Amino acid sequence: MISLKKTLSLPIKDIQEICADFLLKYECVKNTYTAYQMHKNEYTHSQHAKIQRGFNRKRSGDVIVDIQPGWISKSYEKGGTTHGSSYNYDTHVPLVFLWW
Image (cartoon, rainbow, N blue to C red; front, side):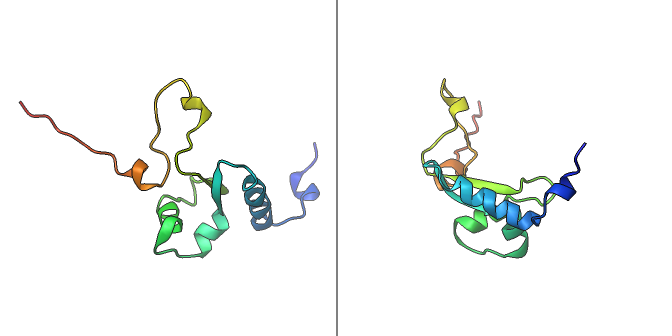
């Protein structure tokens, strides 16, 4: 068995950036964020801040992908929707209580 540490000489930060840059080539990807960015920077406004508020160092991935507005995953092709993006139309979902 080959050790990954021996074959991989790049720091994890660089690998995250390479992956993030690669994903930006896709039409449906608006922006990408690395775990390193989310940990080292503090965003107070804009889309970056929304992404950062949902980021968890232990549970989030190494690269966060922000899709273009209006795009939806292929898994929802047969019906349904998602509330997984950080756009206002997706995060502000009405909640209605019905009382008799």
